[in-house]
Length: 510
Image 1 (tube, one colour):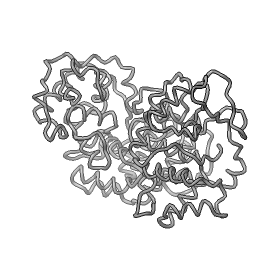
Image 2 (cartoon, one colour):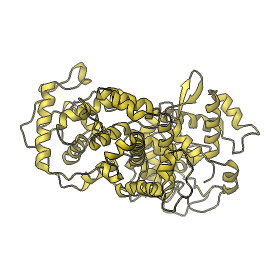
Image 3 (cartoon, one colour):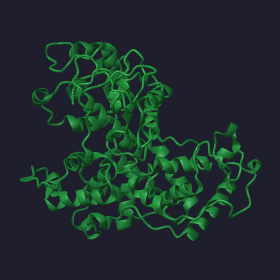
């Protein structure tokens, strides 16, 4: 793919920029729409620049005229189940847009923090082999990198951020000379004209060939089409769940009005009533079990006795594939087993180079396994440290210090759940940490008044969401119950059922 040096106007609010990208990806019809409609969508999301009419289409990897069908990148963002998956997908796209620039910036900030002027001079010097970006283009790239957590602000300079490793994973082994040798001329990007006929034959921008825009992300990396649920919950989309509404008398809003102007959580008695209703409905629903179990990855408790740290490493690899591979459930399991059958997992754990790489080994899966191996190697005796801690929260803190730091976040709770299912971790409070608080789970918890915000910027917020989910779900699998409830009830923000809903819900307070 040619080097992209101009980007949409993402603005200075990083959170709003990410939300705008997600909004465009999720709202663009899967069957496609005229380019005029897509331009209107970009304008509504404040990602349209009339002076540079093609940059939005280039970033989203779609044509700027004719019929716009969501690209592989857009489908991957739309199907991402939580904030981390969204960030990882956009980071992959940011790398694909301009590998030489991303690699040069990463190499520079790894040495020391750099100011934006310094980075501009670096990319304008003879030492930089790629195409020099404009200063506005560089500023926009840096702004998005800060929003994604690739970078962090240190005074007036930028330094590596918590998600630096996600970009570094692409930069490992990158050879700029090979890339530039293969770099082709820019594909056709047609400049749209306001009020033009999208069905008419477009006029190509001068200096560009008239070929179709190519997808820059391999098809194998795309998440399968689905309802926007994470992989472990997609079985719920096809389940015949009975409606949870209308089973009980409606709780009047006056009974669950939260304190502090609606910013806090609902009263304990209200949440207990919600838990009773949810658990009774879920028991009657008879929903099919789904998700992942340790046996899916060939893991058993005996391996903990024989080599606890290696088992923990394998669970970490499984977590990386489940959350980052962006594939179907069967494909995730197949990718793990291919790595295992080829001896790659054992080689990576012991720090040796695999002798052979069979064709069935997925390159992205290999990269994720390598990242997990490196992080586990930095935390020797991690399993023993977990066993020494008496409480569940303390164990999670040990795991977060070892495997967090930009690599794993929500995945840590999934890892705890798998270790608990294996029976190798026990103790008071562990059940609270066996919930994976995906974004759909946190959104539902927030609407039901169980947490004060759906956002989870740190480990404490994730733990609070996990505990709240366990409180409502009881002995059921919390993430399945809450996601299933949201699907069956049509539960969402700006809910159209708020007047007929009998559950205590923030939507009914609007």
